[in-house]
Length: 220
Image (cartoon, rainbow, N blue to C red):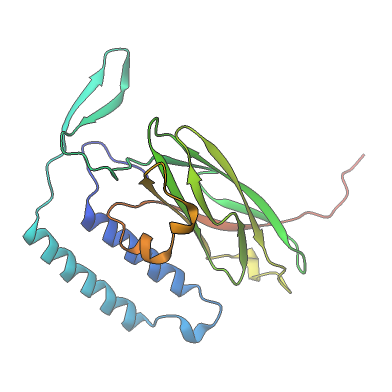
């Protein structure tokens, strides 16, 4: 999720992203009976559009704050907004890798890879949550608190699969959610209800990719 110059995310944007992520996660359920039908998806998107229209009528999108450039950093933009919310993250969490999460796939074996989270905020604590298909993946830890300018490592494990997917095609997605919290906030307080009611979530979505291993020996 990348910011666009002269654009400011608000509650309508966050609602749209959250709803679309929820639908995407349900579309890749292992049990096909639990996956939404095309009609259900279209109906939910229409309801989402209606809700966003109502929100915009009550509270139109605010104008972006004045933009100014630092004299010695011409490529760095600073948004000047006197009414900036405590939870206005401006993407505090940086995820590495940032494009996709790769697993060197082997049937009937648990496969792990590492994810690094960094809190760029100089004076704010950030609570994070790792979300994906729990029937296929295990995340340690799956939530936590990042102190200002700190980083942590997440071990994501693909549970043993009996056989390879056709053409190694994977449609799974990893979602990292983050929100600014107070210094005394604890990991136990990071619940689904808390995240669902949060006013401004920072979300990063990473496609999951399976990489086939080449077992041929290297030529001498």
